[in-house]
Image 1: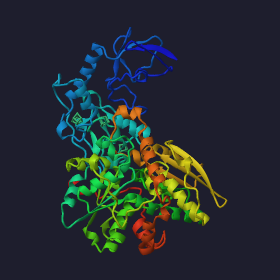
Image 2: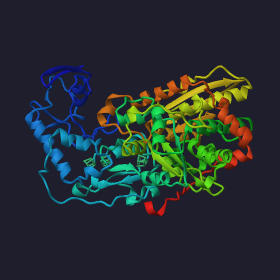
Image 3: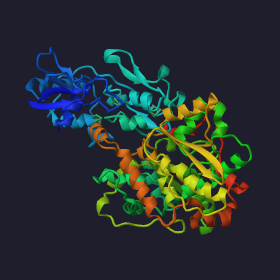
Image 4: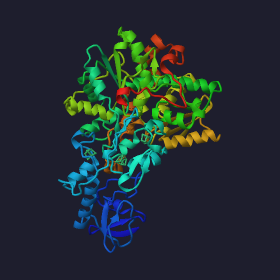
Length: 584
Ligand code: SF4
Ligand code: SF4
Ligand code: SF4
């Protein structure tokens, strides 16, 4: 242990602790900007500097380790003045369009400016100007608001293992760029959006679909149908001040109805459909010497990653479309037919925790009988913005239910939103189907939790099935490399692109560095999904009567020709996206 004083208070912390962490352990909060715990700890911005008695110059507290007998001051006049100067310098080359910025009200830079009472900029001078990059189907990059903190770069490298972006040039000309400054479409970017949730400012954001959705809602000839992904309901409340991981399903449905949607359905039911097809496909592969391990295909950033990096292994991917796409295809076929609605008049709007879903709907193969499966994707954040815009008092809304005739989803569908959930849902159904019995076992705890790679073995009818669950693309690469070098013994693998699964998707509410450092956000949101599962009357996808009716009345059996026509897809080494011209 090391003993020191911080702001005259004695502290005892393990050797190797940073001054920042030591201060935090006794409740002293040092401001940071580029710091993101376990992701970006590089001391680039120097906002966290402190005074160490006897040391020349200031110490950067996020990287400097404690030493025996250190005497640290975190808030001396000199420290405050120095931090203020750093802030002035950052702001002097920042396009300060706060009123029209997507991060207005929750920007770490503007929070610091307020904290330090910045009322004018000391250093006015030349500013760098960048063209806004909106060529990606999912992300917009506006480096006029970039402070070069590199949180995005570290996230892309260290968490996702992609390295699509990096800092180039020196000094005043420094910027974050891709190889040869190509569009994100043309490099290894997967559209996962993890860089957006890492960014402290408005430099990175999703490509909004709000205007298109308002237009559809205001068109009297259009029937607007919303579907909401499992992870949205356990995060949306955070945008309205509710605790992280609060389940706001009823208020969410109520708010969407207030926005003017004709129907609100649950993508969890689409997840149940995915399990019907995926479990069937897995058993077919298992029994007929098909390609194993079979890998899940719900996460579009994972699909793009596999297509670009492991094209020789694409036959390991399940041919199932993701829940949002299956559900969209079903709405424009079975649902439209049941209700006697012209499917051409329907616009399906998916509300998703993910920005890669915006790219997924633009793939040419996500179309059946000339109709797009899904027309628009809104992130959880965009839904929050629409609710604000419509002046809806979210927290005062009464609960509402999903609409008939698709009001029901299983608990298995709910846990699709968390790492391990797709595997657990698939095992519940596959185990029943392989054994030919209705098994009592529902919980597969070995695949739960937030570890990057989880393994489990399940014995059904004397047959042992080895499964693995990986979250983050870096973990996906570990599994793919093991398949390539012949060391992989799994039969079935779940991959989710974002660490912890969709609950931590790139479209979810953004938490500042302090919250990310101190609260296990993934654990809280995940627990809320498991609570929904636990409270569900139906916890196996194949027991959902709504899904059973779809198969009896329309799709036939899982894996049938009709099911394949609507619910399955294929993959390409060079994926394409039909990006509408006016958004390029
Ligand atoms: S990034 Fe922050 S400081 Fe910059 S314009 Fe947006 S809200 Fe204002
Ligand atoms: S979207 Fe994902 S892959 Fe693309 S730059 Fe951001 S973190 Fe990297
Ligand atoms: S884009 Fe955002 S996260 Fe990346 S360096 Fe700029 S401000 Fe930091």
